[in-house]
Length: 279
Image 1: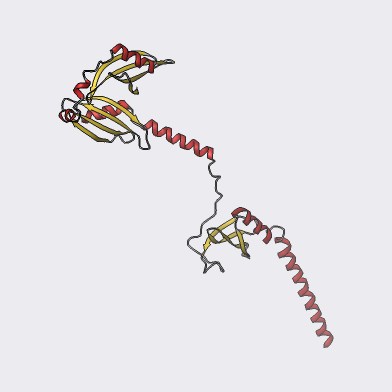
Image 2: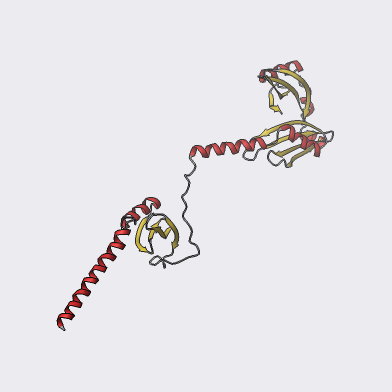
């Protein structure tokens, strides 16, 4: 009886050891060749996220990795075989010690390289160029003003500021009006309106200035050509706020194209008041 019991006990022990060895070979021998080690996972996470790894725990064919970086603590799930990041979720101070499922989980995607400084400068340059192409020209601004005001436009100037605009002065038999036109939106804003009577009262020496000797049209034309080399198209004597000036149009040839310019010259001093390209 004792011999038979000893025989069965010895046989059971041998069977148990055999099954253990087979199971150990099946689970550990097959998976250890493919699964990542804890140190490999730690190295990959630190390299990718530039963060401190707090803990690593293996669960259900994936690693649960807790990290801490400047923005806070996060729980990251990593595939234990391929090493892919499956998801990440932020951890509050209260839950940083244990993982929890949150509606705020999101999939990590490979981020694209940030644009280089060179590409950023090119984009800014393209945007600036596009904005300038969409801006009003002097002639377009003058057309808008003529649609709203009666009189003759005696000056127009493009003012290139942070909010660019076109400054125009229009004169009629009753008054002189200064108007700003937004170069982007085309919106008109009246800046100043001076009646003829008011102008005389504010400038009593105006009549005396008329006694000054004016430069001739020929002299004005030469001054304009010295400023813009080309061919004279038209010269006209005008007056604004009691100051006489010559409105000179010059055509300049550039390669096979022709460009038109308007030069305004003080009729008393001969000084160039403004030069604008007529589009």
